[in-house]
Length: 198
Length: 198
DNA sequence: CGCAAAATATACCAATTGGTATATTTTTAT
DNA sequence: ATAAAAATATACCAATTGGTATATTTTGCG
Image 1 (cartoon, chains in turn yellow, blue, brown, orange):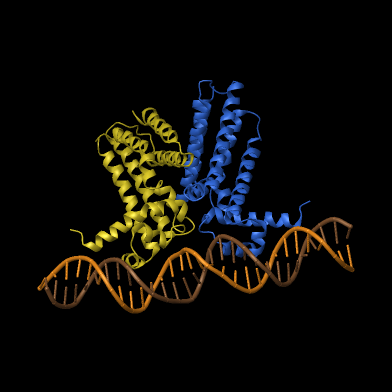
Image 2: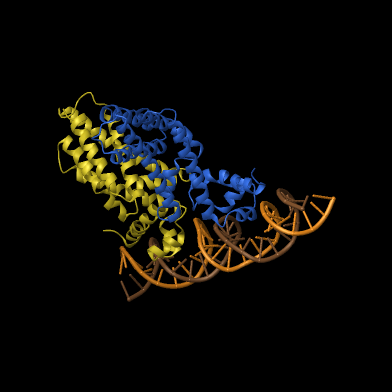
């Protein structure tokens, strides 16, 4: 059971995460935070050492949730090839999902923190590595199970896929047009069939 | 001949543009601006109505420069197919070029302005449309000159290419690894040869 | 219940924010 | 060279910033 204080900590993070994600670190003020949570500075600073620590906690939570969502969706199949299709399937719904939380946290926090906050920026790099490694493992186990060509450079291909995915996310968010994501996911599906599959 | 005042206006924009591009609108303070320019607030506000107007002017200048660079490089050939290769060639050097100005202005300002500044955000969308239209026209004239398959949906393919380019730019900047850009440009070159070319 | 401990609110701080009115300097055309 | 105009500097403003010390309330345990 969660103590009242732990609940408050969690509540602050949940409430504040989309605000940081939308507006960025500098543009999110303590008064934005107190207003959104309905708490006072005393409560905020009782739960977090400073604004930066709160921002980091918020990103970590958002990121953990997102990685879990991918993992959950992916686990709908056991077959590596099918799991790759489940990944593109996941990103087909990404615009919907990320609109609620104010955009893609990986892209937003990367841009926001790059010249401002090393800790936050390193967390973004870490998240990207996780996603890439996940894709790489999928391709690798596809090779092992004889579904995917052995000639494929797994990591290189994983990076290529995630680069395309990220580009599509950025484009649909800035052009406010989901077709970028949908088209790119179709394109990736084609690549899986024609370039990866044996 | 430029009057002294016009020179100052230009100087302010040039000096301030990379700062806004790096740090974003909110994180760039008037004192950052006066410090960087060596001018006082009086001079700044004599040349610009407010911080927002200056930020817009800075982005427009950066964007104009960038579009001109692409156009100049592209005009090294007359052949549409060759021009497409010149585009990927341009982006192969993009990391170098954008590091000086603090990252890709399209990506940075898009993320920064999305929930903060409509005018700025619309300028980003406008720039993207320009680049996409340019790519689309290249493909179209490639069709006309019999170099490119008529079955290609020009705009759709232009969007697809720019999505990949943008993804690659984002990835090299956040992973601080130019190979994302290089690999993606190789990938696009391959696509031009195998999917576009007759 | 009652009490100690933990959590939250209040009231404050110096520093900085974007912006402005006015004083001063610099530019430009005569 | 000079005077009018334009540009820049100075000195100020109220509001807000992130943060803190302390007072008050709430929580959970015996």
